[in-house]
Image (cartoon, rainbow, N blue to C red):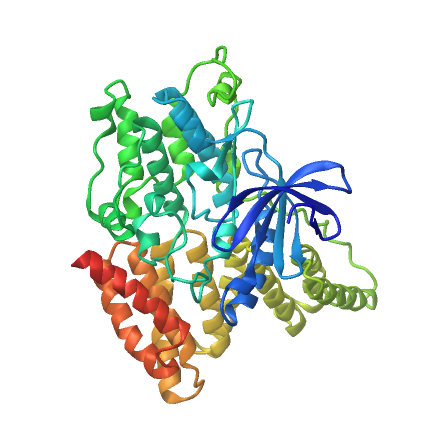
Length: 512
């Protein structure tokens, strides 16, 4: 395949990595005369309708990933399809991956481990603010550059492989690497920023001790250790490690997400006092260099993404001009969405809403239609933090007018819960899903809506969130009852019962 030209522009040179569904190549960008890395994915290796789902999610995740701007994250240059392959073109990173760096420098100096973890926290602060969950943080997905800075790879690719409705793998195995996988992720529960923090704890433990804390001959054995075994204290292996560092590792490795630190920013602040003071780096590929030549995450940007600039509210134009302006904007939004330019559509909708409200009033049909499109487009663009208040306002207004059981109001609340789940707030999402479930179950029984799919999906999400919150008994009970109903509605061969059976299998094994 060397020499193949992707999208008429990227000439493949040397294969540098391969997985079950794809390959990574060094390549040459003929247009800009530069080296790049190209990841190729093969949707045709996924059965049935899942291939199209993979294509859809691939485009979306590439777009969301491109929103993250941080020097510690690999830059995405391009994405698309070429023949049967989906391709992602990324910055070519010089250096060595962290796994090789650890092996080359054993025993790894503990100040180096602190510097590595701090740099990873800086990246996670920006990533989680979008929000994105990496899902597969491990040494092989981190590069150490010659100046000592780290670059995190594969952001978003793991989430492309893990759809909300079924596992895009041949075996149904959870996405990720078992040695670095948080308990809630391995069990099929909902993931969030807390999942990446657990993986960071595993990685930091490995840096300090030379090995991952939980290992075994089988995946099930490793999973059992993650769920039930305490790690051997790192200071028992290396007494020179500071006690506060060991305490932080133990917090990161807490079995329950609620017992872990609240954010990557909190972890960075705990690491900061242990970082080396300014001085002279010890040599090439020294990960303390960014702190000897200081750098840090942006605390004021860790919780809220940079807002998209919105043009100033226009002065009131002639009455005939406003409808024309709004109509043109609506046509432009339709065109942009048809071309897949979702981010531009979001910006245009946000800019035109004040004009539409001034002309037609905030509760007019025109404005409400625009606001619904705005919220839906924000969600499609992965901007859950901005979508949440829009959906809450729409839900409250609709509920006040048509009642809590109104289908439109319920849909807005359902999307609110999805936002909360994506933002890493599992308890709030669980409460919202639970409050919605009786409405959808009653509608199905009364045949006013006649769609059991939404009620089943709500129950699946409730089970996943119970797993994420550590209530394994509750999750098992919820999913066991769901399996019976899902098989009755869809048949045993449908992907939903298959996924539930796999999660119950894991739960049954570890419970036994």
